[in-house]
Amino acid sequence: MADGLGGSTIEDVGALRRDLAAAYRLIALEGMDDGIYTHISARLPDGPDGEKRFLLNPFGLRFDEVTASSLVTVDESGAVIDDPYGAGVNAAGFTIHSAVHMARHDAVCVLHTHTVAGVAVSSVEEGLLSLNQWSAQFHGQVAYHDYEGIALDLAERERLIADLGPKNVMVLRNHGMLTCGRSVAEAVKLTLNLERSCKAQIAALGMGLRPRPLSDEIAAHTARQYQRGYDRYEIDGKPDPEWAAELRRLERTAPGFDA
Image (cartoon, rainbow, N blue to C red):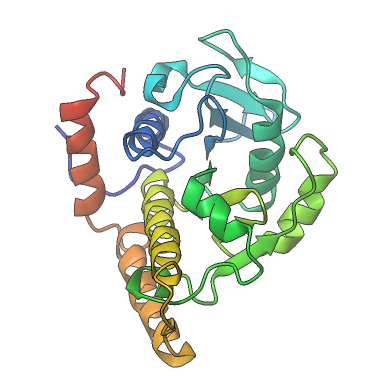
């Protein structure tokens, strides 16, 4: 059963693999996957020669098929170090995720989605609005990166990182959403709340009534409240009941994800 602890750390490779496989299954369970496309990655400890390494899903597996033992290990050059499934990784996934992991060592997990709601919000000039409690947590915390085509050009990495800066949420314009977490658990929780925010924004603006955005003062206050909650688990090391509950859900609905 789930132990109730917070998200795994980079040093705990077994738990990191379990949590990353859980992230794939949870995103699939929420209907937020995109066939065999989009990715969730986790940074591993450096290799014996100091090379940067991270885990990514095998290309060709749907999110609901990913297990802890099927995850592929790649280095910063895109070279496959360990590939139990034998299908390699998606080149576009390597471009985006390697860029973040190499520049942001605090980002243990990087989660990228193409949901209908996320792509819709990424496709409007205003981006994400502070219309409610869900979206207020992201007030002043969202970066934006302009679309440059399918992410196959490694030169885009420098521009993507410059746009991301120190923030943990990025709207990839006309493309989708990206979150960074100090643990897999944090990245998943940010992503789920970001998806709810996008859905609520579309619903609110679709009613044909006048929207009532939160004031900057209230939105900023709410964002700080959320941040203190995240810090409780990521800095203070308190048990994370939300993540433990999600792992229990998977134990019931997707047994074997951690195999």
